[in-house]
Length: 569
Ligand SMILES: Cc1cc2nc3c(=O)[nH]c(=O)nc-3n(C[C@H](O)[C@H](O)[C@H](O)COP(=O)(O)O)c2cc1C
Image 1 (tube, protein in one colour):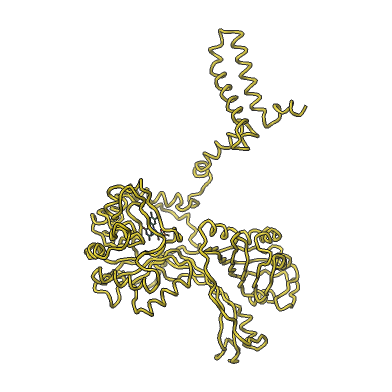
Image 2 (cartoon, helix red, strand yellow; image 1 turned 60 degrees about the vertical axis):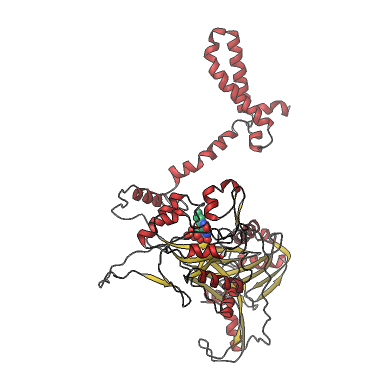
């Protein structure tokens, strides 16, 4: 009986109606041939819909089409026009990413030489963090006459370069069209900027406008290589000595391509690209993941010195995206050991995080506390944000200050310092990194919505936890720790500021906010009764994951002292 009624269920009713209408129209048309022509169009429409419905019913690719023949197409149609609907009806002038409609409009207006200002106030939130404006002053400064430039090039450089603070970062010819390269270089010429070629070689389009050039050499050594892909010093010297090239940049890594080099498929290796890059036509053009000319930090310094010499003493530096801080430290060590210093360093990616242990003896006064001579050991976390010039613009440091204080006072004794060993690095792929990044973010999302049992499933059975002097072990301990907070602060909300992932580790900087409506047990066992107070604490978590992207180690650094002080104020 149920099967018989199925065609009349809401899911299939549209198909049934179409089929019945088609059959009825055909029937009427056959009975009265004179009106058949009039009925032809509706017959075709309903017939086509019926065939579409039957096809939906038979196919197995889309469950929604199989369950709702014909009508489910409305969903696909809406999905198709969703971006336009959002853009035209719902999105505000400021919403779009990466460029809002407002910014897009300014670009269009300027390109067409139209007025790009709107008088009478602004729609901008001028009080938001990072918004910059000019202040009135009773003693305004005179406009500086000299151009603000920075001289790049140490004592080993015969030809230092006076660089603008605004320059054009590396983008290869090949990734960019000839016209884009021409336009950027013309801009560089006009504004006195330097234009970085990117690793795709120094093309005729870079030469045409005569703007200053930084020649970037990647692992493919394009424009200065032998046919087998190895570095060709003579070809390098020939190009690098040209006047338009002001600096040379050795590319080690790039934020967008973590650890995997690059490939320009054979089909895209045109005659022009093959000539500029010095690669064979009809073959994939490979930028290997690492350099062939050196394999150690010391080798890298020697290569930089060689490039500087071959270029006739032009400033020579390197570009990298710092994935592992200790790799960068190894490069610094190589600079000290070899006495070879690059003239500049370009840093790609602007956030980094470090977890470390402070160790030392307290020999001077600390705040109100007199020197004790005691050993001090405490855990710290730092998150750095850099500006486009690679200068640090934000630093968050969180240290277990409560622990430091109790060690100075002698309440906590450090008999011997922990032995610190650098953890081995495991090179995981970008898909894995995206996965652990998402797990790191989900931990707090689940916490906010009170789903801490679900958080247990994100961790290994024997996860190790080091949270504000609590050394815990096991999945249940993680759930209990999170529940301890959520019970004392039911409205506790954790807002992530940065979620970073690399290798098999992740770091999250966050701000925690909530009202204490239940008792809270501190790590030292003392209990703070419900206070009704609101707390706001900043913290950093460092995480290590196993092969299955399960959390196997969690280090939490937040100022427990700050936490307790806010509650007992
Ligand atoms: C089209 C394009 C091509 C790029 N090509 C290179 C390149 O050849 N070499 C390189 O070191 N970086 C290259 N980059 C990366 C940029 O130099 C820069 O590091 C990156 O875009 C991050 O800076 P941003 O946040 O200002 O975009 C390229 C970027 C883009 C968008």
